[in-house]
Length: 142
Image (cartoon, rainbow, N blue to C red; front, side, top):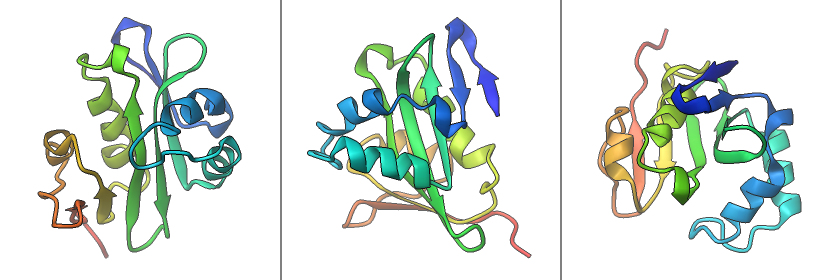
């Protein structure tokens, strides 16, 4: 999948197009991944069930990854848009692509976060519990 957005931005789920250096540079300072090594980021990108990278030209300026058993659940992880690109709806498009438009759309979703709750609630995630876990029920399971 490669989806073009307004302003020359693009979403892509090809792991080969993820700029691991850019993703690592952001995640190493993120509260949920502080100190994560580049090697770990590279391994997580390569082993993810799905990744979605946001870019404009060269380099990833936003990213998320999905882990799933493909049958009972999906996890949304490492979601970010670089600060200088926020406020344009790009984070919403990143989450929409991962959660609603991907192959795991019908599964129940889990997300651990201490911020951006309003963004995730727009995509069906309930309010966080005391451990900052957010849950989105599945939609149509056999």
